[in-house]
Image (cartoon, rainbow, N blue to C red; front, top):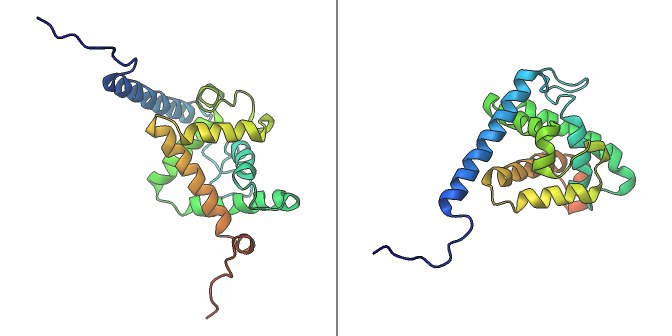
Length: 181
């Protein structure tokens, strides 16, 4: 006599694990493909130590949305460039392995073949609206895939650290600055 099970869920634990492994393999393959095909430029963009030209459109679209409310609208262009410089400085001081992982994240966001399905941003980053970017960030933050949640967390931490290490950000959050010695 075989046991009968009531309605089984559409996605079992085993199915979820298989899906997660498949998604991880897909992202790893896409990152490797980007680096091998030349989509991932090894040399930094002009004026940067680490950030590449392929990284900048994504970051220039994400940073203003992530800093929304923390920066006055008229100061956003300057804040964006300052945050990019701080981010570049921080990335330049990461371990080689952490930098490689961060660049793979940026590669996934830069390549159209992975950007569209994973973020919902099907066109160029420059054409994405603030709502599109907020939806993407919310989607990754609440994803059932831990890889996407980690990607969201990494982006958030990188951008927030890049902005809040700058003295011009301190007044907005009430921080008087470090004591003078």
